[in-house]
Image (cartoon, rainbow, N blue to C red; front, side, top):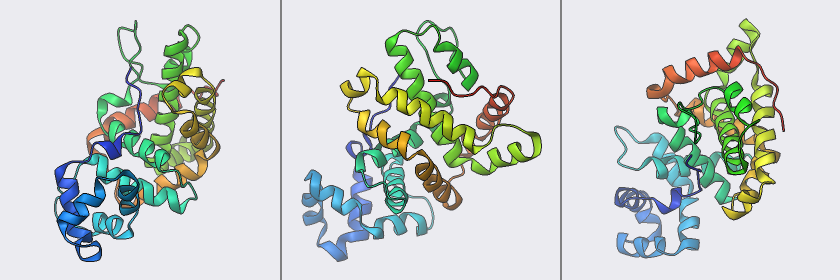
Amino acid sequence: MKLIQPNCRLQFTSDDIDFICTVLEKKIGDAAFLTQLLADTETRDVILDDEKLFHALLEQNGCLRVSTHFYFYILVRHVLRRAGIQDRAVADYVAEVLTEFSRNERLRCSVMGQANPLEYFFEMLAALQQADERTSFCIRTHIGNHSLFLSGVFPERIRFRAERRGFPDLKYYEQLGRTNFRVARDHRLAQRYDLAKIFDTLSEQFGPARRALNDLAERIFTFTDCDASVHALLHQNEHHPNKPSA
């Protein structure tokens, strides 16, 4: 199982750099000087926080020639900062979650020894009972990520099903995500992969992070390619309203 890492800022492309230069060249200087500034990690992070990049991504007409890593990082960083979550590593991690979970296959949890990926929360929670240490850590991490993705990007669908059909509501997803991020935070592998601080923030600030993504979803998210899979996943999970367990 692939662990998600906060690597968006390490995967920017030449198109991303060109976009930054086009948007900020008049403010900072010529393209060559701006490219030189972006080579320095601290300067790069300050440049990426510029409000002009956020607005340019939202207001650009036609197809954007930028990577999904750049796109999600700029947008997520902006909304999380407004929610009071200032750690860039957290924004990078959440942006990577959105990048990964926008692909159908990442909605499922692949576990070593399992013939088929686990698709539903009740399966993942059941698998924890017999999982070894590493697998348990990976499953809990996936549940936390998945809960944040679903409740962040598809809140209205969750609300509709909760109100009309009695299925689990957003509080259930928040509790599920918060609990599993907290347990994953305390695992020794969280320290090894430098994820403990990120998981601590997402556990303590799951609600604000989720609501920040709700705001972003209203502006830009469609995820049409994975819509059918998410529809089926929500339907199945809501028929098995298992309470989160530590």
